[in-house]
Amino acid sequence: MPGMGPPPKPYGSAARHRWAKPKATAAVLHAPEPGEVRVPALPRRAPGTGGWHPLTTAWWCDVWASPMAPEYDDSDRHGLFALAMIVNDFWSTSDARERREAAQEIRLQGQRYGLSPMDRRRLQWEITRADEAQAKGHQRAARQAAIELERGDGQAVPGAGRPADPRAVLRSLPTGEGAS
Image 1 (cartoon, rainbow, N blue to C red):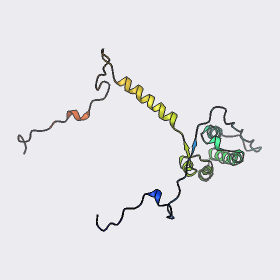
Image 2 (image 1 turned 135 degrees about the horizontal axis):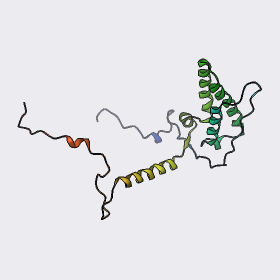
Image 3 (image 1 turned 180 degrees about the vertical axis):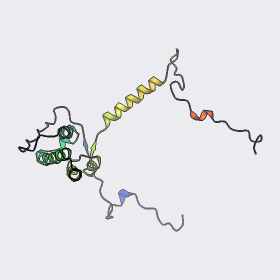
């Protein structure tokens, strides 16, 4: 169009602009094999503070069974211990204000370890979903095979097992008759 000027250059070729950043590659995380990651035991609680809440121990096991676990090194363990104490406070308190404060701290500290999808994006960690996609494909194929009932000659019966099209009840009216 006249007066519009030249079209902008592709994003990749405009490397000298301050807003053009080089593309970063994401670290691809794989679910750890059983026995690949050793789950460290939670530290002993101080005398008189009670034991670990069952939901805290479940959270701890989930963290170490997650695809992020192989990325944690020995120095991360200490921060995760501190985070486990805050998670335990969250589950153990009966005061709503204390629970809210613990939840805020859990959210902030969890960012350091990629414990939510947004945190993993920020850390540029990507979890492989190949197994999940493959399982869904197998389920879809099995569902399709169950829907398509075979006749004696091996041909699929079209539409067998599928719900009827709701538009099939619609009919067009004659154009000249009955129009008022």
